[in-house]
Image (cartoon, rainbow, N blue to C red):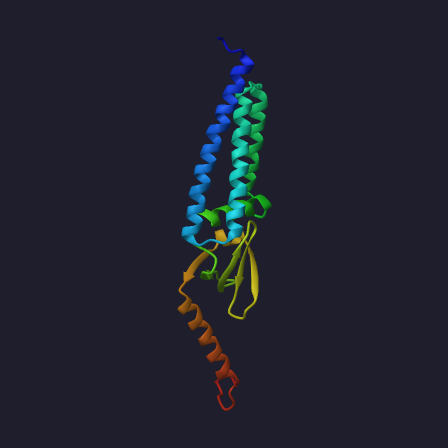
Length: 193
């Protein structure tokens, strides 16, 4: 029994699909285990699964192109387009793709997680607060005055951040409140008065 060329390509396609599905299943289980261990927000998990699905279909598409023998010029043009998009994502500071890339970096490689108390070490705009949420584009930070600030993920990745212990954060709030009380109490005059 000799297989025709089309039958062989069909078998190769199904084998590839099966192997990629097994790999996708294993990777998604590892990611879910990591999310449970790190106590990440459900939104992070949903976005991660979406990104995993996009990568799965991208690899599947390129593999099918190779199996079914599309011309090299078409494949190179497709690869060139993807590389161009990735280049823009990594190097264009204010683009949406850069925010998405930075968001993925925050999801997987940054020790920052929801609920942490952080201080952004910046000469011009110092900020500290509790991380409320990390989305694909923004980080939500609640400061000492109970105001919520949204910071673009590119800013968060570029700035130096210090993860604080909750006690440190609340001690700073207490110091600020004491300073406010000292300023407001009558009879306390400073050299500037």
